[in-house]
Image 1: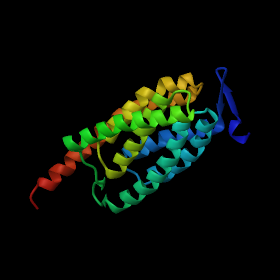
Image 2: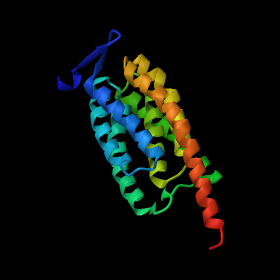
Image 3: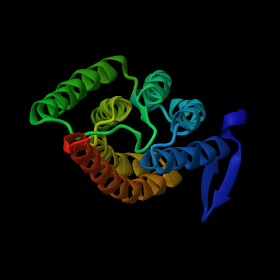
Length: 207
């Protein structure tokens, strides 16, 4: 099939869809760090390519993730356009402790529920990490659309789970990309945290 076409690097076959999809996914992190509106259209192209990759790898959770992320990307694009500040760009903020607890609870409950679904439908050979990546990704993109700094921390958890899963699935390039993701995520968190602090100070300062 066309989506299986690719090249061999160090003895490992890498499909062009995986290569281009993951490179664009890296670009999404880079663009998100800079709060660029291009984040979302690039994300849409990436998820379309990676959907075929994970479907062929029998990772139903990761394939389904691409569909949901695509829908969230449309919302995120719309939300960022509405909340764009002429000075600071996209408005970002830190979540409250209550919001953080809700996110943690949704992450755990969502992972358990979706893993059981994947296992019951035999839609994934690794339902638990597959489900954790699915739920974590949905949460991360939702929080990103809302402009919450904590979305970067959720991405770190996704990367931690994703690297060994990609390796065990034979998707070595994707595993390598996840490692790069982790470094970009740390840098993005620092940058967004700094921006959120500036916005808070600006809001408190007298006119």
